[in-house]
Length: 321
Image 1 (tube, rainbow, N blue to C red):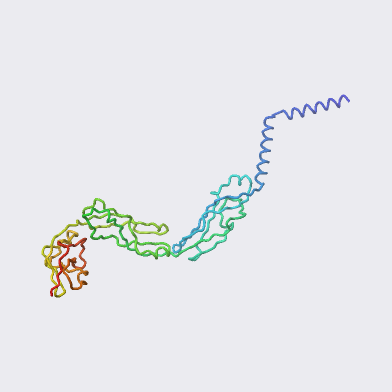
Image 2 (cartoon, rainbow, N blue to C red; image 1 turned 30 degrees about the horizontal axis):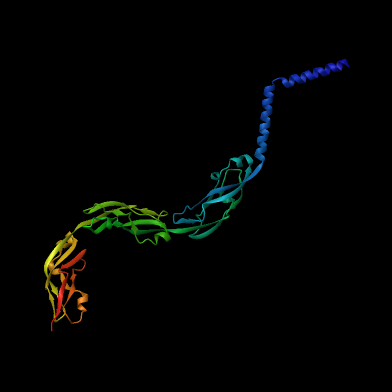
């Protein structure tokens, strides 16, 4: 009996020494083992989550077709995967990519499934909301469109006028969706102010490409030469009043004509080209008492003048018996 108790005591001492020897290392090993076990367990555990506002990208590799409309640019995607990965997953880590290269021009309704979703390895796509995507594609065309400068003539001083302009180049090449490009009649420049301008000038003006964000335009600016000239007055004295009706006498028979217009225009105007006649109102009058009537000034066709008047502006009309 005494030997048995002694043997048991020896066994307990041996176990105690085995446990306490290098106890720190053994405790660390135990912690590491538990950590590995939890990691493996977490990796195997599956978890579902909905990622909101996942971006949608629709593209085409073709140069003759362009995507002109996508009903929406984000969707919600329900995914499943290891809990540890799902916990770190963000909407920007997932994307819906639609290759429309095989589609013809027109409207299409695509059914979205997991094949459209780019996501990390090991992530399963359960659902996409909304599940369909309306898109539109159009044929790409190219047109040469005239460039028209947008000149703010009202910004000129009162005694100056725009006589005309030239644009170089005259046209721009616009390449883009057929619906947009086919309706273009001209391309305006951005507004050109003439405040403080007193002579002709040449300016490089960017084109106004509002509404053409989906098109390519070349060039995107044009050189615009604007002809500006001073407005002056010129007096042509003693111009006879032409009377076409018989039995009518006017007093006075000659008047001065004052013409206002661009300096170069008035410089070439000859007094023989100016005709003074009775107004249409006077020609409709019935015979009767003497009365004053207005005059009308006739200038050469195409002459650019801002104003033409007579002094005096009215004459006395008398019907002869």
